[in-house]
Length: 309
Image 1 (cartoon, helix red, strand yellow):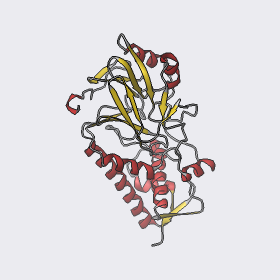
Image 2: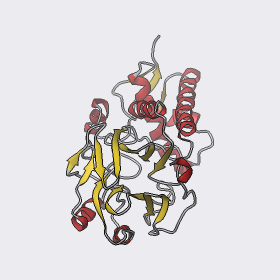
Image 3: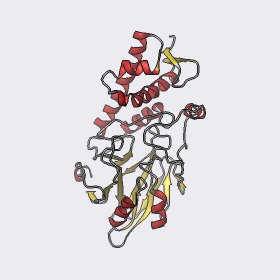
Image 4: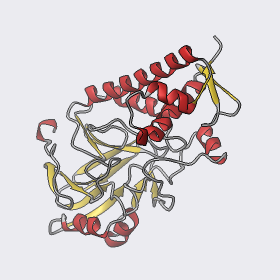
């Protein structure tokens, strides 16, 4: 199916574009620096019951565009949600009411959260980035490896936590809908306590071990060389980790803002808070691997140092 994929270019919001014989994409009208050209909603199938992957943000215009993309005799039979961020999941319930289809996902927004992130959340660390859909609740909770069948299609659910604890990807015979875990236009945001870099890297390793033909992400165009993209993503994170360790070795114990300035030397001031989130995600991961230690509780206010060998 790889050679059949198309749709690298941006289409107008609300316009259904065929990416393959049984895949349509509709872009939501929510472009931003975080969402690129907007959230991609996908219809899988042709004739009969279709799967809708990532219904998108709360938008009446987007809801009507999705329904208008259905051909005569077609209906939405399953609504699959990659994760509970406000740009992906809020339309799930309105579309479920309109179509009668169940909503399927790994779980609510905090489902699958690690003890480390749960502790940070309990101690008051707020999320950052795209915003959590705390009202999201699926009708069916999917386990890793669950199979969902419809009219002429079968999808396998893959739990790929990291960008968010409840993040799932969906495999359609080697074409994987990767949500916000892998995108072609940018690296994925991993912002504690919703994001977890340790699990993100494990999910990357899992995808790297597969032999998929393409990724269809939650934002931006298709990724037609998944092996190269996932290798780049892993290497990008390893380079950032190395820079953090080198900064700690050179400067000794340091706090998060100092470390961030040392690592992100060319980042505009307006983006430094987001850069701090990224460095914090790495520091939490490094602490879990006993490569970095914090003086006092592990949180953004701590002083960090290299762990004693």
